[in-house]
Amino acid sequence: MKMSKLFVQTLREFPNDAEAISHKLLVRAGYIKKLANGIYTYMPLAQRVLAKISNIIREEMNASGAQELTMPFVQPAEVWQKSGRWQKYGKELLRCKDRHDNEMCLAPTHEEVITSVVGEVVNSYKQLPLNLYQIQTKFRDEIRPRFGLLRGREFIMKDAYSFHTTQEDLEREYEVMGKTYTSIFNRCGLETTAVQSDSGAIGGAVSHEYMVLVDTMVGENDVFYCKNCSYSANSNHAISKLPIETTDGGFDKEEIVDTPNTKTIEELAAFLKVNANCILKAVAYIADSRPVIAMIRGDKEVEETKLMNVLNALEIRPMENNEVKEFLNSEAGFISYRNVDKSKVRVVFDNTVKGMKNFVLGADIKDKHIVGANLEEGIEFYDISLVKEGEFCPECGKPLYITRGIEVGNIFQLGTKYSEPMGACYTDEKGQLKPYIMGCYGIGVSRTMAAAIEKYHDDFGIVWPIEIAPYHVDIVPVNIDDETQSKVAYEIYEKLTKEGIEAVIDDRSDRAGVKFKDADLIGFPIRITVGKTIQEGLVEYKTRKDGVMTKLTPDEAIENVIKYVKKSS
Image (cartoon, rainbow, N blue to C red):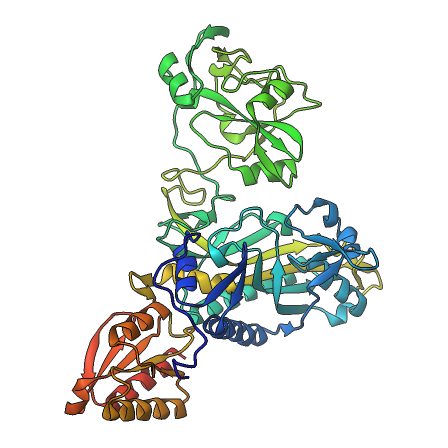
């Protein structure tokens, strides 16, 4: 490919609306163009990267025994109504009507469609197990699209669905997919960590996310992990063992006391001279239009995904001050659970509250708290708290550490969540109808491209893993009008192309500095520069990853490129 013909526009400055480094570099290096908020055109460079990721996925999925198909992007409401998700799925589901006034939606996922298809085709246990996958565009109407391709509205995803007759067979396929995913990401040049996670809107009892651990601040999730054992989990799923410590407030009796100007836990603890873990904190929410109070120890924070799962809610938000008065008849900062109408307000207690005694509690009166309070009998407890770094691993008891991660893949054990309500059944050995036991396995193709940039970049631009780089090598004649430089550069280009190496020759008449900057920005793994040293029979050979530059003969440079590329393939 001649650089003069490559459909790319590099920019001098980063876009103003970009926060993530992947978003900044994808735009500035000419990989994507914004059409609307969260919706992008994939330019030729990006298309080449996406094609390589997709091909790796296809090869590994096919090798695992899965079969590829393509399902509709526009789906009728009927299949979603059968599964029960038409009403439950949030506003991310973009609903519309066709000219016949039929309700439709743009696919955010394909569980309903694949269950419907298999339900019509597979009717005997002899046809199972089965794993079907696709690489398809999806659309989720995110309320706040951010970080470019990491949280866009339209995106490319590989999703696979498996069908089984037993839970044991599902678990076997789950393990197969886990190994397949590790192989896929390794081949993409990405090291991933499989962490326990929340199943979210997909559902299912068991799920893992494949996370690229990054140093940038745009990692979507905190990942807690143990250095002593294999435990790792997304913050929305992580659990821990707390240090052994007293949670007895030490008050002799229960009474209401004045606590002026103490709306925060820190202010209250200092005023009453108690530890924060001796305060029972009330956090008020609106979940699917219903008021909720989460009761949690004062030194802990609510993990809202866990709370949503306990409530079986789709959306949750903090309660406004006026709503605290309306629904709880209380004051923000002084809320108690004791006086609310339990038929109208759901109260959820965190597990950390269990051992608390003689604690501090809001009195539902401004500037007043109850001290010496104790729990009533019959309270149910749930895990709704956010783990903190330094708390102990639930498996081995050693300290937990925290890092940031970007999810690039996920696997779920769905069970019969979709097959049962949709009536998708097979006939077993005894002639009885049974719902399929299902698994679901997703990879964000466009997210993987962005995650690779978040992981591999420097001050000059993208540092692609060679396995998914758009081109392997950039050949730069310093002066294209110099007959010798141009001749040697084209000879290198033609020889590499014949060897199957994906090469670009920068035949533009721009200054060498412009060419070098574009090469680093775009992220070509190798650059061969043909300049004045060609008079000595030498060219400059530079690898983008380590920045090492050596002077070689043209034949030596060609040989090095071939070895480098073949080694990575």
